[in-house]
Image (cartoon, rainbow, N blue to C red; front, top):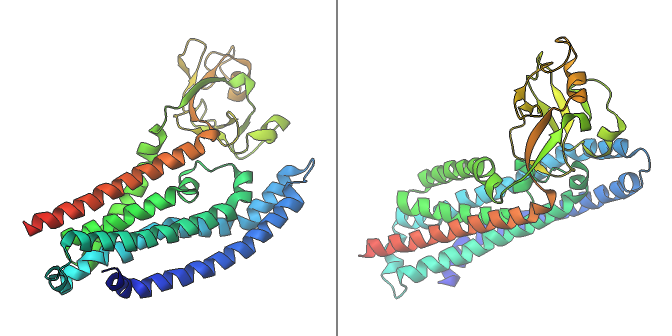
Amino acid sequence: MIWLTWRQYRVQTLSALAVLAAIAIYLVVTGLRMRELYDSTVAGCGSDCESAKNALVVEYQTLTYYVTSLLLATPGIIGIFWGAPLIARELETGTHRLIWNQSITRGRWLLVKLGAVGLVAVAVTGVLSLLVTWWASPIDRVNLDRFTALMFSGRGVAPLGYAAFAFTLGASAGLLIRRTVPAMAATLAAFLAVQIFVPYAIRPHFVAPEHTDVALASLVMAPVGGGEESGAMKEGWNANHIQLKGSGNDAHLRIGVLRPGVWVVSDLGAVLDASGKEVRGAEGCAEPKTDPFECFAASKHHIEVDYQPADRYWTFQWIETGIFLALSGLLAGFCSWWLRRRAA
């Protein structure tokens, strides 16, 4: 059975390994260049660190986007082209009858297919994720944005869970739909829906967020899109600017909150006074026409912030990976149950 599965999927496997080898060579070459630039400019930047960081980001920003997108797309591609045809193609062509009439049971047939092909799919994704995480580490240290939806899903161990889930999702779709092309379309739609839903509806609640009140008078504020920023803003808030829209006279405030790398998960649209009442614009100031920026800076106004600390990054990675691996196990169990049900 293992030999038969290898014969069926050897072209896909060898093609994937060849593509992975080519990508690995490219990432190693460009990654070493990025590290050389980081060590020569950012690591020893002295007093002009912002210019050095901006130069690194500008040079590799577009390439980072494409590399991250490649890793994000890999689990979906595996689910569509490896998972969906896994069972659907057998059912569509009728070859399953020949196999099931031999000494091989349906359970063993399914176990070998899901296990052998699934392990290869997860291994390929894991190696690619390791390469991308290593490659992007210099620019990630500059941007401090690993908690953003795009970067979180394109780094670390989470892509392994995505690959396992996409593969078993495709296999389940093929088992239910029994047609390869419709199963591929259903796999794509379901996987995209889950990938959009999880980061915004589930991920923020993996661990209860930290809560703090931040006094506006203690922060550095400047109009978005213009104005000079003080040294305090430049020292560490560049990765955590918060926009408070509509705060009196439609002013927009850019506020540096907490330490770099944190994930602010609360709605920061409300500015509160000392009693906790929401205030807007120059409300509470002596003169109604007072500039909102000056008003907030001189008042006791504050904002309430819920955030995930930066040191929870790997905790969130492992939680999300575990969730998707658990979903993969449930889908594999469903496939086994469905085959036994058909046998009955």
